[in-house]
Image 1 (cartoon, rainbow, N blue to C red):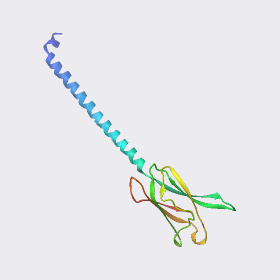
Image 2 (cartoon, one colour):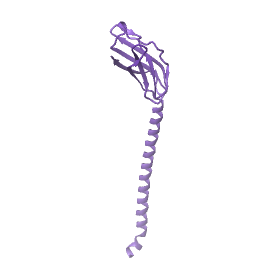
Image 3 (cartoon, rainbow, N blue to C red):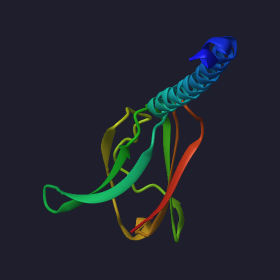
Length: 146
């Protein structure tokens, strides 16, 4: 007991140093957690600006037979603008679409466009879709379609 009374100043210094070290450690952890939260928030905001276009081809019932349809899907949350399609087959660049290609496609939506397929426009095609979104200009997606 007398040891505590004689060394109370040293004990107070040790306790204050320990509390200082703990508070610095807590401050560093809070700074790191804040930095991670800001980065995650920025990533979420960027995802809301991005458009992600994909292409698919299907057949739908027509008046006399099944008609070919091109489906353009925007899987992203952002709006795609300035959409353009390029079809290339063994004969060169072609346009098998008979429907109108939209220039704007909202996020998480899709559009169907009719296609005419005959000798000069027969698959396989190399299709490139280009678009702009609020995150980046000049996005491209290329696929081979049969």
